[in-house]
Image (cartoon, rainbow, N blue to C red; front, side):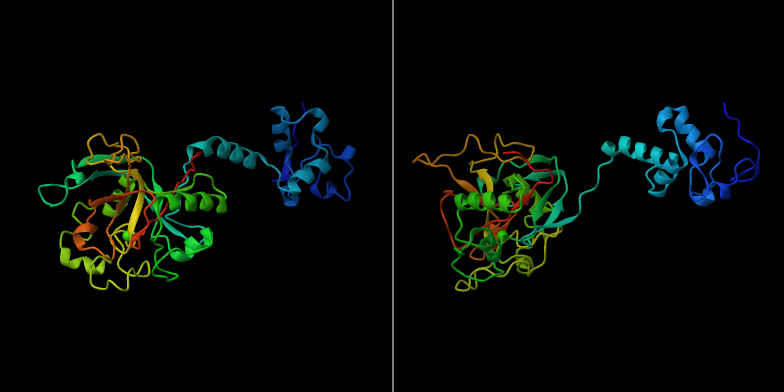
Length: 347
Ligand SMILES: [Ca+2]
């Protein structure tokens, strides 16, 4: 076994001076690793480092360092013991490290999203403090298990045209919400949007529970701004006073506490769920409820819309209020917004 010779000073062995081991001067056979301590000054491998790798059989003798090989690896920073251990630690710990998703997300169509956190809330109306309809009952706890991205505005006419190629809206304006879209139409939009963004299963309608959770944004009042109906003008286009004009450009009023605009008012928003006359039997995990649907006398099922619109009074813009219509019905106050999954589903 090779014995290191005493150093005259750090990195300067007596038997093989660094200046004699420079690439221009040092022949491999004259300066084998076991004979030569390569100076850190020249950014080369020390003998100890070479020896470490040999000891742990990280190199075969055949591959044991010639001076040129050491120099090559070192020059290109391909390894060093410190780097090797750091890389190994990162490799082992990477699965444990959950990178926090960004708070906001904007896709190629300039659709903006904000991250809605996982959490629990009470869905439905509290009959002790709020008047409303029976289909808002019973209030029940829902656990949203996974965070998701919610579009901060309704889908605009410009975004709809970018995906579908034409504008069905009655009140045409680039930055206003698209309307005259049925629940069925939206399924076509989502299919094309996922294809366009190259992300199968990323984009979908919110479930009814996700929609109400995001609208309430941690509040328990009738509207996210409180229980004062007269204050709604700062938060929602939900007052019948400008019927000929229709809806408004998205994002002009104050957002709710989670940064979502026009959840109440402007246009109604289709959600994923079919309609039920009450919440008895509703899922408690925030998923869409699409079995045991209510059926009309003609056997038809309906889909739910939320939030009220520019043509409604504030009572219909409450967080708990629900309406439902046939999935093929279009209206000039019917629009939607989309959810983007953090982890795309496979459909
Ligand atoms: Ca709305």
